[in-house]
Image 1 (cartoon, one colour):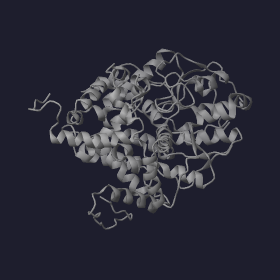
Image 2 (image 1 turned 90 degrees about the vertical axis):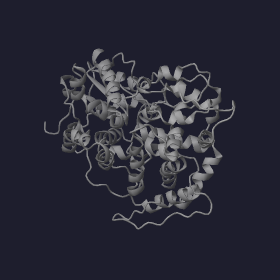
Image 3 (image 1 turned 180 degrees about the horizontal axis):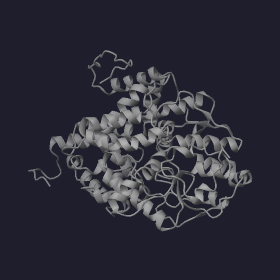
Image 4 (image 1 turned 60 degrees about the vertical axis):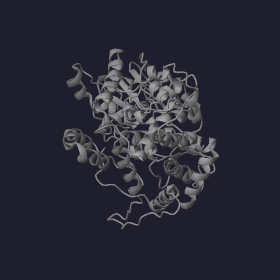
Length: 217
Length: 294
């Protein structure tokens, strides 16, 4: 635990900012404000099949959040190990949407650029979004290649025998294809990015690449 | 009832046996499926980790398209897609603020969504719409003697209160028991297989998968049935790796439930994509296959 000189009841500015961002997100999730009702019973931790691998248990995550220590949560691996199986949400006696809160924390972490050390798991999600924005559908080959090549090329090699077995059976696609309505989806995403920006800023313009895709951020 | 069919990105390749066998089963039962035209990725769990409103809009485009194409029932076989589309419907219904934002974004794509589409899982449609009686009448062979571990995975029964119990569902059990099979004691029937953790934290996912397979094998199952492409690949593709890591054999065929259902309905092996499974069929299953070459 980090020790800080604090006036009881107040938060350091960085923590307050994180908490504000997180609360904004949580408020939009239907029922998100129920997190204040947590009675620390631990049913979530007990039900979670991967809590054994987390450094901070689900119950402690909620406790830390309520204590204003969001940064500590974001520096842990816990939210990234969540497999979103929803067992915690199903069993919580106070009907708190714990899994959805973990999603909100993932988003807060990405916005704030806060991750545990040497931990590129969020890159998988970012890569996924990039592929969907480019083609309209996911492409597993691109997803895997993009994730492994940057950080663990040997991992990709280890996957090749399985990849070959799947390919022989017609279960691997080599070339991604674009959907017809791709322009429409990009228009939506562009608009979403513009709405997120502080007033007065305009999105940077990029050259379209070989598949006609220009990133919006 | 008219159904639109939303395969989702996984069913095109990795989950191809699911796509093929699902279509074969619905054809055999006289309810052909119409694929949703120009569907896009639902966003899965990963888009929601990055962006909420955009993710909802991307997912809602499919619901808007279904409305536009005249459908109010959308069948989504993949658990991930099913959960995301259901969640989209619920969020838009419960939060007028989110709905307004998503409507604005959909407008940029020339679409609108009026919340009139219901998202269904094929298991739900087969058992609750078409009905077990009708399926049993259409069956060409009995599954007598077959011991099954029906694995639902985590997302078709959670988090929404849907068509079955959230921890101990019985829809698949009832369907196959009526067809003559028996379902073994399988308390882990909705425990997570690890999903995307197989890529991000493989040790954790492998442990989860090994626990599931151990439970099925120890209770005498001849095969595991799945309802999700991610679960099926996770359970099927790493069995030899598990043997090396944990020492004991984890070999057991893992089929999509529609593949076994198709076998009972007399569909041919190639129609059901049986040649695409990684683990070969064992004796109890092999006897149920209708092969075109015979």
